[in-house]
Image 1: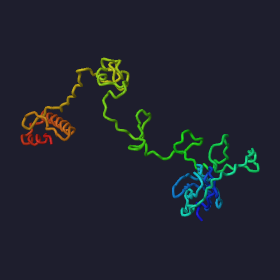
Image 2: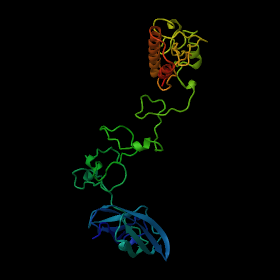
Image 3: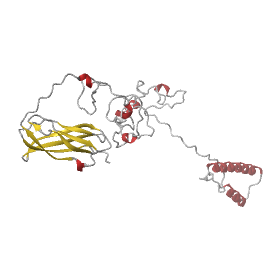
Image 4: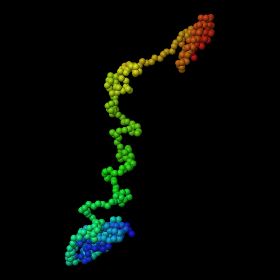
Length: 339
């Protein structure tokens, strides 16, 4: 058995026999499916092989295994007595058996006698009201009632898993319950769909940023310019005049220890102190200093001290004893030489 399948089974209007009067075409439809369904289709009426009328057909909701008329949207009045043939097709949404959607051609005749007038209908609205003998069922009817209707409780049908889940995409307003934000940081990064512009934002980024090339005009006016820095001596009102990292004129040369430098002055170059040059007697009778050792200034000074000591002792010996032979003086002179 198919889930959805409707089938036309009979022509109910125009009736047989018919008269020259207005009729609303109708086709009886049976629901062969397991779900309730609406029947839609069309009907065509021919005479002598010529199409003279066509209209759409529509039914109310038909329960499974039930029947109901699909009615024409327009009325048809026969042009006169004669023989006519009707063709009808009926289907439904998702019809799974399209082979039974066509009604076999139906031939009917129309006589010239007018139908008898219908009997008058007495007022009987109460019969169709709630709990009356012929209460009206509005299911499947189209149109809008004059009075607003209170809907039955049905919120579960709009919730997740319901038969009519609401899609909030595109809706405006703020939901009563806070909604989790979907992960989307990539959209704010470089080349993302919603790249973030940090211009004007406060705070410090986690990663150190390399500044773009810029001159002093890009800085706040509270920064000192090169001209202001060069004029600190003459202009004590310049920016940074009271800063501890720049020296003022009043502090120069004071007990604070700052250098007293002015324009044009220089720090005197430190002169190197020469080594002492003592008078020493050489083996050849000349006075000379021992040759300093370039690898050690300390060693050179020590040689001088030892040479001075030997010279003094030799002078004392000369005054107290006989002259020293020349060969000995030569040997002693060799010992006076610096290494």
